[in-house]
Image (cartoon, rainbow over all chains, first blue to last red; front, side, top):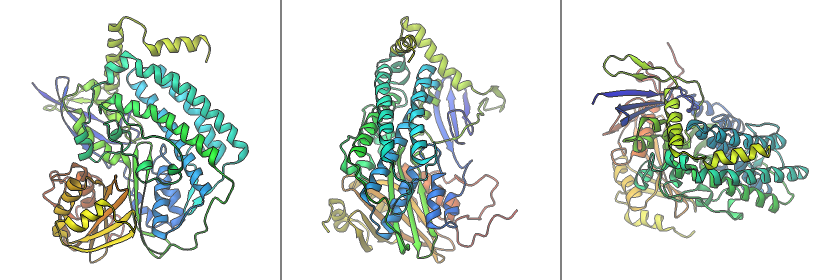
Length: 410
Length: 149
């Protein structure tokens, strides 16, 4: 059969940033894949060498707009490792709360996108509806919905006011209640099962060989989580569990994210409960010569920072490794043998961190003619869901819940 | 300081000669090895210690490029960083991507940004820099002075 190349990217609605997946397909089956990055390389590691240690925290916050607090956390942990700084207890709790709020909104964002992608716009609307209150809380605490600028070497920049605590708790109640309804419906939905179970399987061996992190590795049943493996902030002081799911397919990764929402809610509640008044930062006078390593569990997995100082006010070297950098290459192991309608969903399952315009086309390998215009993969994916729905001949749990909620005007 | 299982294994069984082992804190250990031993040392970390390669950092030190292989040992909550140094002007080291796909991208990135050649790399194409970027210009090298058309 004739092999065709399907370029997915560099710009694509599912990919928040430019990335290029070249899929080799035979008929409907993906037989090989090639990846290329670097389209949006901003040279942040180089730029970091020209900023003072204090400014770098703001710089790394801008690496990603979704997990914008994970990079500053990993960076300040690296600096605290380098300079031997200890952080006041209240600051640790605030760091944990901010990090978990971020996980809440990031996971809800992903669930929404995945829902849209398989043609479940109900899931998309709901998930994003309940993501809003989380962003409101961020605005309440930090003044910003994104880029909270909360982390600094030695502590945090802002306190959480006592009068804000009831608002945070009520938001957690809303998200937890909605989340339960929602998770139940998604996990039992036969259409979602048909679209995601057994699709894009990442085996344990591949997960280890590609050194994948976050929900991607936990969806393959491997309990790697930096929050437990090297408890930073106050993760060692609260009760929670590492969510893993067997299977390694798209469903397992989705389930990990959905169930982690409840763990995050649990962690934030305990932190708010245990937090006592006190200082929120240690004074840092100078950064000595040396090197430090810091890592933190971002919503997508481990964020790694290495900083070296020569005793001046700027880093001599600052190495950053974001989670998608190790998760995306695992795509090569998961997409081969899958149908092209599932390819973009499999890509989305690792929640690659990206920004969005869209350009893709099916190109005939020999003539290089564009055969299909853009948005084709999204359409194919959504149509596949419609076909499964039609074949089912009955109302799915998600549709049912949507109807009930609509009646009750929730 | 109690010695973890993985550190004990590194001290007694690492199949290459270590120049020095520096225990900065219970969770941060730096092991210095000669560049010739990097493949064996990495294999040992991955296969015997079941450590995960977090990433590799390359640092231009004028006389050579320092390479730091950061291995995270989940069970022992410990970072073991294997340090080595390759000499300039033609820095060169054996690739570990031959047996570890996780090292594939980072070795290509270090070649792009610092010019270290990874011998035996299965796919030594450009990764980060644009296709039109001039050959031999290394943005993270000390002598780099900005982009000239």
